[in-house]
Image 1 (cartoon, one colour):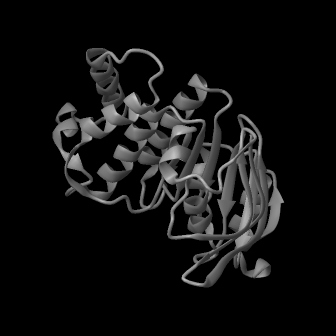
Image 2 (cartoon, one colour):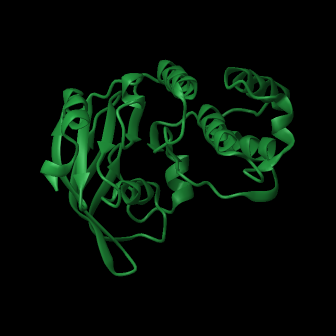
Amino acid sequence: MLSIQNFSVSIDDQSILKNISLEFASGQVHAIMGPNGSGKSTLAQSIMGNSAYDIMQGSLRFNGIELINLPAHQRAQKGIFLSFQQPPAIPGLRVFTLLKEMRQMNAKESFDLSAFMQEVKEYLDILSMDHWFLERSCNDGFSGGERKRFELLQLLVARPKVVILDEIDSGLDIDALKLVATVLQKVKSENPDLIILIITHYNRILEHIAPDCVHVLVNGEIVQSSDADLVHQLEKTGYADLL
């Protein structure tokens, strides 16, 4: 469903990713692990279409469609969602306005505003967020926890086909990790074909969301791929033997 072939990426003339090839089948959960500076976030941003990253070679295909030349918003329209580490603040843009535009962009039927408002409030209840949150400006003055919950709220509204989570577990306590898992389980139950790609340093989130495949990225290259047992191996040995 999502295929990356011979993918090389640079930024500011510095090579970051080198000949990456990965295949993500429908319904699978994949984890990308590796030390700091290995290229994990570059991979996420490149899949999403961040124009700051230069694709030097390779192919990125989703449902048979080549995405390399598509801008980020068109990739989002095709069902790709990225929750990234430091989402920007957008003063003046109401949370509800952004969520409404996200849904309307993909709405294939007439849009019922009152029904959508009720749906969003139910999502806020799942996330243990006050309803007045909808009146705030996007990420403006948000705490770290609020930013992460807002990313999850957008995920629920977007109903994507591919979810990329870039270190969403960073700084989260056990209850917050369980909340992330609850949201992922909900969106996956609504779309069993959903592909989930989790980028992380640790095994904590993977204890709640078991991966089908684990890939280790070191110095811009995939150096090892295996099943979930690889997570426990890395927990014991670290990355030293792979550097």
